[in-house]
Image (cartoon, rainbow, N blue to C red; front, side, top):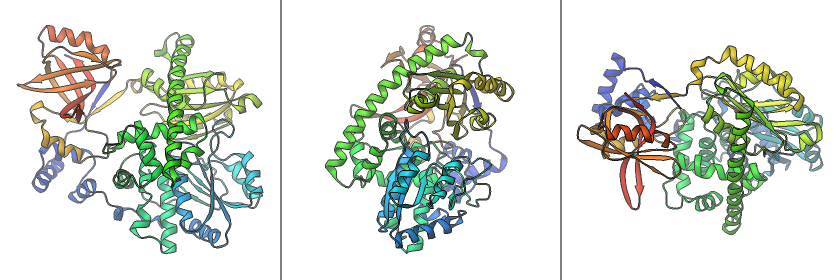
Amino acid sequence: MKKKWQYADSLTPEEIKLREEIVQTYKCPSIIAELLIKKGNKSLDGINSFFDPKMKDTHDPFIFKDMKKAVNRIISAIENKEKIIIFGDYDVDGTTSTALLYLGLKKCNGKVGYYIPDRETDGYGLSLNRIENFKKDDVKLIITVDCGINACKEVDAINAENIDIIITDHHNPKEILPDAFAILNPKLEDCPYPYKDLAGVGVAYKLLIGLYMKLGLDSDKNINQFLDLVAVGTIADIVPLTGENRIFASSGLKRLRLRKNIGLSALINRSGLLNKKINTTDIVFGLAPRINAAGRMGSAMKAVELLISENDEESRKLAIEIEKQNRKRQDFDQQTYREACQAIERKYDDISKVNCIVIASDNWHPGVIGIVASKLVEKYYRPAIMLSFKNEKSEKNNVGIGSSRSIAGFDLFEALSQHDDMLESFGGHKYAAGLSIMREYIEPFEKRLNEYTGKHLCKDLLIPPLKVDRELEIYHINNNFLNWLQKFAPYGTKNMRPVFYTQRVSLAGYPYIVGRNHIKMKITKDGETLDMIGFNMGDYLPLLMQSYQNRRSNIRIAYTLELNNWQGKTNIQGKLKDIDFD
């Protein structure tokens, strides 16, 4: 698919001056200094923090609105031996948050349990059918993690049973908030907490730090022991890796590599990451899908069991079970993706005239439609909503469970908000949201949604953007340059790997296909060469072959740089993002 290259702005005179200061201070290449500035670092102090993120630079948790109130209520529950339930979401952010607070409160001698809703029987977030069970179990305090911010009806029902509830969440709040005992959410309009992009596990972690501070347990050892869970949840939830999230990710990755959490260690072994220096990519594509698979294919309670396990053999068995669920999930993914593409081809005569895809089925497993919706956005590059009627809710009252994904520049959460009168429920973020809807409302909902997108989604947004940081000549690329680039890690949203482009390159040999549809080639310019790989870019092979056979220097490439380890050898490799021909 053709991409729209978006070039970074040139440096201002003030930034050029700062670039020279950076070069002199750090003895780094000028290109590295320029990239640091383009990453938003506007001072030497900021660059020091960027290169060396430290926990001491995080904010006081008591800046949070309601933090003092929440901490005091938890202390009261601990002192009075009241039963506390941690209520989490079934994704990685939710399960790591649940494990974090469960382990953290256990260390305070809290009488604590946890519950993760079943995706099919309970649906997303707080469920009314569980409240009666909590009452029977004599629960006095519920703490939500990564959910609850829009659960007004459910919170009212909990209050009616004389159970207190503390909501910790990071999702967008609606206009009317639940009547909870306390709400911790940096996105609340009146919350003064300065960093707004925390994941759910980040909010839960701030609550635990606040509790430990109040109890005098806030030693570095106590506070840092859960950073591996915080890093996994933060990175997996694809929140911006800036500010506190960058600190949590960097510090947590260091702890994760020490293999202190027995459950995570067992999962690392099953993920083929045993001898790797684990990075954000390994979490997003290795650990996170496996943890998610527990909630997608069965019960996310299994994931929490693994994350809190203190027994090697138990962890090993749980990791094996979750690995089996992940393989099952992969099979469902592939089958559902094929069926979804077929449904789109049947439904829409001309996809280019469709602003938003809405498809439904009685056969799709609700645990995989979010993943498949993301793949549909990648293929068709427009917002996509997938609805599954293969769940207990649909059997009882014809309600479908949906997952939606959006494209850059289009606020899907706001779009759903404008049509919430047709939805049973919805919640999420700007680019990803869950929803439920009655079957009879699908057609009018889609009609209104496409009318809305027709007004608010300009055609330019339907061309995938590629943000390009700067031009780079091959002769600049060497081990020293790569070593400096590696200091930019951990990579993630709002701190992506720098994307470079090089013009007028030619091929130093025949390009060829590896794997399913990946292109391998060697490029050359000015006497220098560089190995390149382009994942799922095999369709470019005919044009590349033509360019090579004609000995033309007409190729323009956009790429990132990485070290490739293969059969004991390490070399610098470019990972293609796009190819263009002059």
